[in-house]
Amino acid sequence: MLERIEEIEQRALKDLAQAVDQETLKAWKVKFLGRSAELGEILDGLKDLSKDERPTVGRRVNEAKSKLEAAHQKRSEELRKDELERSLQGERIDVTLPGRMIPRGRLHPATQTLRRIYAIWADMGFQIYRSREVEWDEYNFELLNMPAHHPARDMWDTFYTTTPGMLLRTHTSPGQIHVMRERVPEPIRVILPGMCYRYEQVTARAEFQFTQVEGLAVGKNITFTDLKGTLAAFARRMFDKDVGIRFRAQHFPFTEPSAEMDIECFICGGKGCTVCKYTGWLEILGCGMVHPRVLQNGGYDSTQFSGFAFGMGPERIAMLRHQIDDIRQFWQNDLRFLEQF
Ligand code: FA5
Image (cartoon, rainbow, N blue to C red; front, side, top):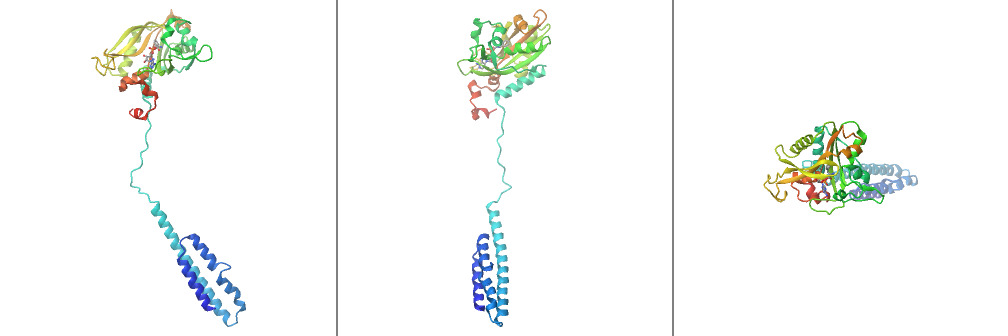
């Protein structure tokens, strides 16, 4: 019997040395130290042994069990250490490595220009007023002195909706009527930024969707000189304090007199280049004194009040500032273009 115990002990120790993880260790424990293990069976069979043999065999079995338990404990610790070491090696992090750069987002060039425009006008006391993009024909044309069939409507190729009289605004000027009707008889100093839509041929200088910033000042004794001085101050802050500017006569049905403002081409310094089409000047906006009929449509007494208005295109201004030669770049979302700003 003692030899059998010895043999079990040796076999168990040999098996234990081969256990490679906690799973096999668990199975080993069940096999050699569990309830129905061989040593357990021997203990159960003690009662069948002779009185002389019983204590010796009993002591020997208990000794073997203790030995195996201690060996199991030791092996288990060894394996746990090995596993920890392996996982530390596998998941090793070099904390001295430089981190991965998170690419920084940036504002769209049109937004950057718009924000600069807002800041300059805000500094001059103009509030931002938002007006709707889907308009009635009445506001986009009629109240701006362009009745139905008026030939001046041809200046704006229009996207009409299926609802009669409803269209996508072709310019931000209808906002003038909304502000006037809301503020009458208070003086007004506002800018109205937003998207405009025109059913136009898309070219390097014209999109069918673009932004405009309208400006409107209404009060007593506002003159064309105020308009010129204010726009000149804006241009010098937007571009360069020494930039040359000029006003050219133009026609808009909702302003009288009307003009367009050009700035000296800062790419060639006025000498002539492809950007200014060899004129030395670049157009940036349309403007004029608010037509008396438009003032009346807005609720103001045109014998008491006067005002000036202007409308500029921020994409065109951004093109000049950054020497971008094609307006279509703005809405193509090509990161190679956008990341330059
Ligand atoms: C107007 O839209 C007038 N409402 C401006 C105005 C307002 C005049 C108040 C008088 C008083 P115009 O069509 O010229 O005018 O457009 C004004 C500006 O919008 C242009 O100078 C240009 O910068 C921009 N713009 C016009 N059409 C396009 C287009 N298709 N793509 C990009 N920008 C455009």
